[in-house]
Amino acid sequence: MRRPLVFFALLLAAPAAVLAHHGWGSYDASKTIVVEGPIQASSYTNPHATITVKAPDKTWTVTLAPVARMQSRGATAELVGIGKTVKAEGYASKAEPDEMRAERITVDGKTVEMR
Amino acid sequence: MLVLADAPQFLIALEQSGLALAIRQSTWAYPAANVGHIVALTLFAGSVAIMDMRLLGAFAAAPPASIVRPARRMAMLGLALMALTGFMLFAAEASHVATNGVFQVKAGLIALGILNALLIAGPALAKVADMPAGAALPARVRLAAIVSLLIWVSVAACGRLIAYF
Image (spheres, chains in turn blue, cyan):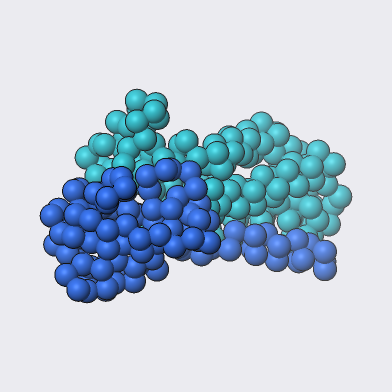
């Protein structure tokens, strides 16, 4: 009876059910980048809000946090709406050349953590 | 959410459908489906584990069919709930998820797991239907149980890993 129990324990342990949606593994966390400019498009949706930011170098897609976290931290749809100027600090995607994941954003003098 | 333009058309259509839009725009639909998927997983994985462990010789004081039959029904319920909640999560970002390599492996493993349950485990279970408690079970039955456990644990692992690759 002992061996089956170990097997069963392994089965339960394997799918460690962490509810975070996206990992940060596909972003280059070794180098923080700053993307600053006007918001040209804004999608206040799950699983992550995203904004399009026209920075001096290029137009970035900036991945933000899930909607409920954005709301609870005061990053409303208005705050990240079209026309606002945002400063996003975070990491560039290793897969998509124009995408970055924001660790924090600053809009209207208000800084909100995304993680 | 940006659609991947080079994804197959039906995935783009799904991602841009009213249902997918509603899931993304709701504050709670996506997180609720996420929680529901994990709750359904506990039901499914627990039922599969009990069923397969009995076929491997655990809980031998009870006749195999008395455990395997109800556990298999619970597993089917769990699988149906996983499919429902999984479809919601998938629809919300279909073009991205479907082109994810880990998701493709997961989908293939789910197909294998269902084939194993229907084509190998199903007929094998007919053989144990009238076996008494404590009886030694055929090797084919034990093999199907091991394959089942390996496949479904791998499916669960892939599910978690989609977000990281």
